[in-house]
Image (cartoon, rainbow, N blue to C red; front, side, top):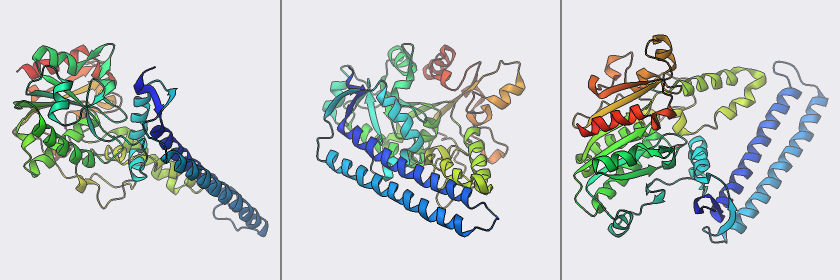
Length: 403
Protein backbone atom coordinates (compact mmCIF):
# COMPACT_ATOMS: atom_id res chain seq x y z
CA UNK A 1 0.00 0.00 0.00
CA UNK A 2 1.66 3.23 -1.18
CA UNK A 3 2.37 5.78 1.51
CA UNK A 4 1.12 8.55 -0.77
CA UNK A 5 -2.29 6.87 -1.06
CA UNK A 6 -2.88 6.34 2.66
CA UNK A 7 -5.21 8.51 4.69
CA UNK A 8 -3.75 10.42 7.65
CA UNK A 9 -5.49 12.21 10.52
CA UNK A 10 -4.87 15.57 8.81
CA UNK A 11 -6.74 14.29 5.72
CA UNK A 12 -9.64 13.14 7.90
CA UNK A 13 -9.81 16.52 9.63
CA UNK A 14 -9.93 18.27 6.28
CA UNK A 15 -12.63 15.92 5.02
CA UNK A 16 -14.79 16.42 8.14
CA UNK A 17 -14.46 20.19 7.77
CA UNK A 18 -15.40 19.97 4.10
CA UNK A 19 -18.43 17.72 4.72
CA UNK A 20 -19.66 20.01 7.49
CA UNK A 21 -19.49 23.12 5.29
CA UNK A 22 -20.93 21.29 2.28
CA UNK A 23 -23.91 20.09 4.33
CA UNK A 24 -24.61 23.64 5.50
CA UNK A 25 -24.29 24.97 1.95
CA UNK A 26 -26.68 22.34 0.59
CA UNK A 27 -29.12 23.13 3.42
CA UNK A 28 -29.00 26.85 2.58
CA UNK A 29 -29.57 26.08 -1.11
CA UNK A 30 -32.48 23.72 -0.37
CA UNK A 31 -34.11 26.30 1.87
CA UNK A 32 -33.73 29.02 -0.77
CA UNK A 33 -35.30 26.77 -3.44
CA UNK A 34 -38.10 25.80 -1.02
CA UNK A 35 -38.92 29.46 -0.41
CA UNK A 36 -39.01 30.17 -4.15
CA UNK A 37 -41.49 27.34 -4.62
CA UNK A 38 -43.69 28.30 -1.65
CA UNK A 39 -43.52 32.02 -2.47
CA UNK A 40 -43.51 32.30 -6.28
CA UNK A 41 -41.87 35.53 -7.49
CA UNK A 42 -44.21 38.41 -8.38
CA UNK A 43 -47.19 36.71 -6.66
CA UNK A 44 -48.73 37.63 -3.25
CA UNK A 45 -48.24 35.17 -0.35
CA UNK A 46 -51.07 33.77 1.78
CA UNK A 47 -50.97 33.19 5.59
CA UNK A 48 -50.69 29.42 4.96
CA UNK A 49 -47.60 29.98 2.87
CA UNK A 50 -46.03 32.04 5.67
CA UNK A 51 -46.78 29.28 8.19
CA UNK A 52 -45.14 26.69 5.92
CA UNK A 53 -42.06 28.91 5.54
CA UNK A 54 -41.80 29.47 9.32
CA UNK A 55 -41.98 25.76 10.11
CA UNK A 56 -39.50 24.82 7.38
CA UNK A 57 -37.09 27.56 8.54
CA UNK A 58 -37.01 25.97 12.00
CA UNK A 59 -36.23 22.57 10.47
CA UNK A 60 -33.43 23.97 8.29
CA UNK A 61 -32.02 25.91 11.23
CA UNK A 62 -31.92 22.73 13.32
CA UNK A 63 -30.10 20.88 10.54
CA UNK A 64 -27.47 23.62 10.42
CA UNK A 65 -27.06 23.67 14.20
CA UNK A 66 -26.70 19.88 14.49
CA UNK A 67 -24.22 19.85 11.59
CA UNK A 68 -22.08 22.57 13.19
CA UNK A 69 -22.11 20.87 16.60
CA UNK A 70 -21.33 17.41 15.23
CA UNK A 71 -18.71 18.55 12.75
CA UNK A 72 -17.12 20.96 15.19
CA UNK A 73 -16.96 18.27 17.86
CA UNK A 74 -15.27 15.81 15.54
CA UNK A 75 -12.78 18.46 14.45
CA UNK A 76 -11.84 19.20 18.07
CA UNK A 77 -11.30 15.51 18.80
CA UNK A 78 -9.16 15.01 15.69
CA UNK A 79 -7.16 18.16 16.50
CA UNK A 80 -5.82 16.39 19.63
CA UNK A 81 -4.34 13.55 17.55
CA UNK A 82 -1.02 13.57 15.70
CA UNK A 83 -1.93 14.88 12.20
CA UNK A 84 0.61 12.53 10.58
CA UNK A 85 -0.95 9.41 12.14
CA UNK A 86 -1.61 6.81 9.43
CA UNK A 87 -5.13 5.35 9.53
CA UNK A 88 -4.19 2.39 7.35
CA UNK A 89 -6.87 3.28 4.78
CA UNK A 90 -5.74 3.55 1.17
CA UNK A 91 -7.29 5.79 -1.47
CA UNK A 92 -5.88 5.30 -5.01
CA UNK A 93 -4.37 8.47 -6.51
CA UNK A 94 -5.06 10.41 -3.30
CA UNK A 95 -2.66 13.24 -4.20
CA UNK A 96 -4.28 13.67 -7.60
CA UNK A 97 -7.76 13.81 -6.06
CA UNK A 98 -6.57 16.45 -3.57
CA UNK A 99 -5.03 18.44 -6.44
CA UNK A 100 -8.38 18.48 -8.28
CA UNK A 101 -10.15 19.57 -5.10
CA UNK A 102 -7.65 22.41 -4.64
CA UNK A 103 -8.16 23.57 -8.20
CA UNK A 104 -11.91 23.82 -7.70
CA UNK A 105 -12.11 25.26 -4.16
CA UNK A 106 -8.50 25.81 -3.13
CA UNK A 107 -9.05 29.41 -2.02
CA UNK A 108 -11.88 28.26 0.26
CA UNK A 109 -9.63 25.57 1.76
CA UNK A 110 -6.95 28.16 2.58
CA UNK A 111 -9.46 30.67 3.96
CA UNK A 112 -10.82 28.02 6.33
CA UNK A 113 -7.39 26.59 7.29
CA UNK A 114 -8.42 23.22 5.89
CA UNK A 115 -5.56 20.67 6.07
CA UNK A 116 -6.41 19.56 2.52
CA UNK A 117 -5.08 22.87 1.14
CA UNK A 118 -1.87 22.28 -0.81
CA UNK A 119 1.11 24.44 0.18
CA UNK A 120 3.47 25.51 -2.59
CA UNK A 121 6.45 23.18 -2.66
CA UNK A 122 9.24 21.94 -4.88
CA UNK A 123 9.25 18.18 -5.43
CA UNK A 124 11.68 15.56 -6.66
CA UNK A 125 10.46 12.09 -7.64
CA UNK A 126 7.12 12.80 -5.96
CA UNK A 127 8.70 13.82 -2.65
CA UNK A 128 8.87 17.30 -1.08
CA UNK A 129 12.25 18.99 -1.48
CA UNK A 130 13.23 20.95 1.62
CA UNK A 131 15.28 24.00 0.73
CA UNK A 132 18.58 23.34 2.45
CA UNK A 133 21.86 22.16 0.95
CA UNK A 134 21.88 18.84 2.79
CA UNK A 135 18.42 17.81 1.57
CA UNK A 136 19.08 18.98 -1.97
CA UNK A 137 22.33 17.01 -2.16
CA UNK A 138 20.50 13.97 -0.79
CA UNK A 139 17.77 14.28 -3.43
CA UNK A 140 20.30 14.68 -6.25
CA UNK A 141 23.33 12.35 -6.03
CA UNK A 142 24.52 14.00 -9.25
CA UNK A 143 23.67 17.68 -9.33
CA UNK A 144 24.53 20.60 -11.57
CA UNK A 145 23.59 24.24 -11.90
CA UNK A 146 21.33 23.85 -14.94
CA UNK A 147 17.80 23.62 -13.50
CA UNK A 148 14.58 22.70 -15.31
CA UNK A 149 11.42 23.57 -13.38
CA UNK A 150 8.14 21.92 -14.42
CA UNK A 151 5.00 23.92 -13.52
CA UNK A 152 1.67 22.05 -13.83
CA UNK A 153 -1.77 23.37 -14.69
CA UNK A 154 -5.11 23.76 -12.89
CA UNK A 155 -6.41 20.74 -10.92
CA UNK A 156 -3.13 18.95 -11.55
CA UNK A 157 0.09 18.12 -9.72
CA UNK A 158 3.58 16.90 -10.53
CA UNK A 159 2.35 13.34 -11.23
CA UNK A 160 0.40 14.36 -14.36
CA UNK A 161 3.60 15.18 -16.23
CA UNK A 162 4.18 11.43 -16.52
CA UNK A 163 2.10 9.40 -18.98
CA UNK A 164 2.77 5.86 -20.19
CA UNK A 165 6.20 6.00 -18.61
CA UNK A 166 7.17 9.24 -20.39
CA UNK A 167 7.84 12.60 -18.73
CA UNK A 168 8.94 15.52 -20.92
CA UNK A 169 11.08 16.95 -18.13
CA UNK A 170 12.75 13.70 -17.11
CA UNK A 171 13.69 12.81 -20.69
CA UNK A 172 15.03 16.27 -21.48
CA UNK A 173 16.99 16.45 -18.21
CA UNK A 174 18.69 13.15 -19.05
CA UNK A 175 19.42 14.02 -22.67
CA UNK A 176 20.60 17.58 -22.06
CA UNK A 177 22.28 17.02 -18.68
CA UNK A 178 20.04 19.26 -16.57
CA UNK A 179 18.66 18.94 -13.03
CA UNK A 180 14.91 18.38 -12.93
CA UNK A 181 12.58 19.94 -10.37
CA UNK A 182 8.78 19.97 -10.13
CA UNK A 183 6.50 22.57 -8.59
CA UNK A 184 3.28 21.67 -6.77
CA UNK A 185 0.83 24.43 -5.86
CA UNK A 186 -2.78 25.19 -5.01
CA UNK A 187 -4.41 26.08 -8.35
CA UNK A 188 -7.49 27.48 -6.61
CA UNK A 189 -5.65 30.56 -5.35
CA UNK A 190 -5.41 33.71 -7.44
CA UNK A 191 -2.73 33.30 -10.10
CA UNK A 192 -1.03 36.44 -8.80
CA UNK A 193 -0.88 34.92 -5.30
CA UNK A 194 0.81 31.82 -6.67
CA UNK A 195 3.08 34.01 -8.78
CA UNK A 196 4.20 35.93 -5.69
CA UNK A 197 4.80 32.69 -3.79
CA UNK A 198 6.78 31.17 -6.67
CA UNK A 199 8.87 34.34 -6.87
CA UNK A 200 9.83 34.01 -3.18
CA UNK A 201 10.40 30.26 -3.42
CA UNK A 202 12.66 30.54 -6.47
CA UNK A 203 14.76 33.16 -4.73
CA UNK A 204 15.21 30.85 -1.76
CA UNK A 205 15.95 27.92 -4.08
CA UNK A 206 18.71 29.79 -5.94
CA UNK A 207 20.25 30.97 -2.67
CA UNK A 208 20.37 27.46 -1.18
CA UNK A 209 21.37 25.47 -4.30
CA UNK A 210 24.55 23.56 -3.34
CA UNK A 211 26.42 24.36 -6.59
CA UNK A 212 26.53 27.62 -8.58
CA UNK A 213 23.39 28.02 -10.69
CA UNK A 214 24.19 28.74 -14.33
CA UNK A 215 20.73 28.62 -15.90
CA UNK A 216 17.06 28.15 -15.08
CA UNK A 217 14.47 26.90 -17.58
CA UNK A 218 10.73 26.74 -16.92
CA UNK A 219 8.45 24.33 -18.78
CA UNK A 220 4.84 25.13 -17.97
CA UNK A 221 1.46 23.70 -18.86
CA UNK A 222 -1.85 25.59 -18.99
CA UNK A 223 -2.35 27.73 -15.85
CA UNK A 224 1.27 27.00 -14.94
CA UNK A 225 2.36 29.33 -17.73
CA UNK A 226 0.39 32.21 -16.21
CA UNK A 227 1.81 31.47 -12.76
CA UNK A 228 5.31 31.52 -14.27
CA UNK A 229 4.74 34.85 -16.02
CA UNK A 230 3.32 36.28 -12.80
CA UNK A 231 6.36 35.10 -10.79
CA UNK A 232 8.74 36.65 -13.31
CA UNK A 233 6.81 39.93 -13.28
CA UNK A 234 7.02 40.22 -9.49
CA UNK A 235 10.61 38.96 -9.44
CA UNK A 236 11.77 41.61 -11.90
CA UNK A 237 9.85 44.30 -10.03
CA UNK A 238 11.66 43.33 -6.83
CA UNK A 239 15.00 42.80 -8.64
CA UNK A 240 15.24 39.23 -7.34
CA UNK A 241 18.47 37.44 -8.23
CA UNK A 242 16.74 34.29 -9.59
CA UNK A 243 15.43 36.24 -12.58
CA UNK A 244 19.02 36.73 -13.81
CA UNK A 245 19.40 32.97 -14.26
CA UNK A 246 16.11 32.44 -16.10
CA UNK A 247 17.01 31.82 -19.75
CA UNK A 248 13.92 30.22 -21.30
CA UNK A 249 10.20 29.65 -20.59
CA UNK A 250 8.15 27.18 -22.61
CA UNK A 251 4.37 27.48 -22.49
CA UNK A 252 2.23 24.46 -23.37
CA UNK A 253 -1.40 25.40 -23.97
CA UNK A 254 -1.32 28.39 -21.61
CA UNK A 255 -4.45 30.62 -21.84
CA UNK A 256 -2.59 33.94 -21.97
CA UNK A 257 -5.79 35.76 -22.91
CA UNK A 258 -8.28 33.53 -21.15
CA UNK A 259 -10.13 30.27 -21.63
CA UNK A 260 -13.61 29.97 -23.22
CA UNK A 261 -14.88 27.48 -20.64
CA UNK A 262 -14.64 30.01 -17.80
CA UNK A 263 -16.02 32.77 -20.00
CA UNK A 264 -19.09 30.66 -20.86
CA UNK A 265 -19.43 29.52 -17.24
CA UNK A 266 -19.52 33.11 -16.02
CA UNK A 267 -22.13 34.00 -18.66
CA UNK A 268 -24.37 31.11 -17.57
CA UNK A 269 -23.95 32.12 -13.92
CA UNK A 270 -25.13 35.62 -14.85
CA UNK A 271 -28.25 34.19 -16.50
CA UNK A 272 -29.05 32.11 -13.40
CA UNK A 273 -28.72 35.23 -11.27
CA UNK A 274 -31.50 37.10 -13.10
CA UNK A 275 -34.00 34.26 -13.58
CA UNK A 276 -36.32 34.25 -10.52
CA UNK A 277 -37.00 30.51 -10.18
CA UNK A 278 -33.41 29.33 -10.63
CA UNK A 279 -31.65 32.20 -8.87
CA UNK A 280 -30.79 30.05 -5.80
CA UNK A 281 -28.68 27.83 -8.04
CA UNK A 282 -26.51 30.81 -9.01
CA UNK A 283 -24.72 30.33 -5.69
CA UNK A 284 -23.42 26.99 -6.99
CA UNK A 285 -21.64 28.82 -9.81
CA UNK A 286 -19.87 30.95 -7.20
CA UNK A 287 -18.23 27.93 -5.63
CA UNK A 288 -15.51 27.94 -8.32
CA UNK A 289 -12.14 29.15 -7.11
CA UNK A 290 -10.31 32.42 -7.62
CA UNK A 291 -7.81 30.58 -9.81
CA UNK A 292 -10.59 29.46 -12.14
CA UNK A 293 -12.12 32.93 -12.44
CA UNK A 294 -8.66 34.35 -13.22
CA UNK A 295 -8.68 32.13 -16.31
CA UNK A 296 -11.56 34.10 -17.81
CA UNK A 297 -9.16 36.72 -19.14
CA UNK A 298 -5.77 35.36 -18.06
CA UNK A 299 -5.19 37.60 -15.03
CA UNK A 300 -1.63 37.38 -13.68
CA UNK A 301 -1.26 40.41 -11.36
CA UNK A 302 -3.31 41.69 -8.44
CA UNK A 303 -4.43 44.80 -10.30
CA UNK A 304 -6.31 42.54 -12.73
CA UNK A 305 -8.80 41.41 -10.07
CA UNK A 306 -8.41 43.55 -6.93
CA UNK A 307 -11.48 45.71 -6.40
CA UNK A 308 -13.59 43.83 -8.96
CA UNK A 309 -16.37 41.32 -8.34
CA UNK A 310 -14.72 38.24 -9.81
CA UNK A 311 -18.16 36.77 -10.58
CA UNK A 312 -19.36 39.97 -12.23
CA UNK A 313 -20.00 40.20 -15.94
CA UNK A 314 -17.34 42.83 -16.72
CA UNK A 315 -15.07 43.16 -19.75
CA UNK A 316 -11.37 42.32 -19.83
CA UNK A 317 -9.62 44.97 -17.72
CA UNK A 318 -6.31 43.27 -17.12
CA UNK A 319 -3.08 45.20 -17.36
CA UNK A 320 -1.02 44.18 -20.42
CA UNK A 321 2.19 42.50 -19.23
CA UNK A 322 4.56 42.04 -22.19
CA UNK A 323 6.93 39.11 -22.53
CA UNK A 324 10.35 39.75 -20.97
CA UNK A 325 12.97 41.00 -23.40
CA UNK A 326 15.86 39.17 -21.71
CA UNK A 327 14.20 35.71 -21.52
CA UNK A 328 13.49 33.54 -24.56
CA UNK A 329 9.80 32.60 -24.55
CA UNK A 330 8.25 29.77 -26.58
CA UNK A 331 4.61 28.78 -26.99
CA UNK A 332 2.99 25.56 -28.18
CA UNK A 333 -0.74 25.46 -28.93
CA UNK A 334 -2.75 22.31 -29.40
CA UNK A 335 -5.46 21.78 -32.01
CA UNK A 336 -8.02 19.00 -32.03
CA UNK A 337 -8.43 19.48 -35.77
CA UNK A 338 -6.24 18.63 -38.73
CA UNK A 339 -4.16 21.43 -40.39
CA UNK A 340 -6.55 21.72 -43.34
CA UNK A 341 -9.61 22.32 -41.13
CA UNK A 342 -9.08 26.02 -40.42
CA UNK A 343 -12.53 26.64 -38.90
CA UNK A 344 -12.23 23.90 -36.25
CA UNK A 345 -8.63 24.84 -35.58
CA UNK A 346 -9.63 28.45 -34.96
CA UNK A 347 -12.70 27.71 -32.83
CA UNK A 348 -11.88 24.52 -30.92
CA UNK A 349 -8.20 24.90 -30.18
CA UNK A 350 -7.06 22.07 -27.91
CA UNK A 351 -10.54 21.68 -26.42
CA UNK A 352 -9.88 24.02 -23.48
CA UNK A 353 -7.64 26.78 -24.83
CA UNK A 354 -7.99 28.46 -28.21
CA UNK A 355 -4.91 28.74 -30.39
CA UNK A 356 -4.92 32.56 -30.41
CA UNK A 357 -4.86 32.64 -26.61
CA UNK A 358 -2.13 29.98 -26.38
CA UNK A 359 0.04 31.92 -28.86
CA UNK A 360 -0.60 35.28 -27.19
CA UNK A 361 -2.67 36.74 -30.05
CA UNK A 362 -5.28 39.42 -29.22
CA UNK A 363 -7.72 41.57 -31.17
CA UNK A 364 -6.11 44.62 -29.55
CA UNK A 365 -2.48 44.80 -30.76
CA UNK A 366 -1.21 46.48 -27.56
CA UNK A 367 -2.32 43.41 -25.59
CA UNK A 368 -0.58 40.86 -27.82
CA UNK A 369 2.35 38.84 -26.52
CA UNK A 370 5.17 39.19 -29.00
CA UNK A 371 6.31 35.60 -29.48
CA UNK A 372 8.79 35.30 -32.33
CA UNK A 373 7.38 33.24 -35.19
CA UNK A 374 10.16 30.67 -34.80
CA UNK A 375 9.27 30.39 -31.11
CA UNK A 376 5.71 29.16 -31.67
CA UNK A 377 4.29 25.85 -32.80
CA UNK A 378 0.84 24.33 -33.35
CA UNK A 379 0.48 20.62 -32.59
CA UNK A 380 -2.45 19.37 -34.69
CA UNK A 381 -4.75 16.54 -33.60
CA UNK A 382 -3.52 17.21 -30.08
CA UNK A 383 -5.79 17.94 -27.10
CA UNK A 384 -4.97 19.97 -24.00
CA UNK A 385 -3.77 16.98 -21.98
CA UNK A 386 -2.12 15.39 -25.01
CA UNK A 387 0.44 18.21 -24.92
CA UNK A 388 1.96 16.40 -21.94
CA UNK A 389 2.49 13.13 -23.79
CA UNK A 390 2.96 14.12 -27.44
CA UNK A 391 6.24 13.04 -29.03
CA UNK A 392 5.95 15.95 -31.45
CA UNK A 393 5.68 18.40 -28.56
CA UNK A 394 8.59 16.75 -26.77
CA UNK A 395 10.83 16.97 -29.84
CA UNK A 396 9.97 20.64 -30.30
CA UNK A 397 10.78 21.43 -26.67
CA UNK A 398 14.08 19.57 -26.95
CA UNK A 399 14.95 21.42 -30.17
CA UNK A 400 14.30 24.82 -28.55
CA UNK A 401 16.32 23.98 -25.45
CA UNK A 402 19.28 22.77 -27.52
CA UNK A 403 19.43 25.97 -29.57
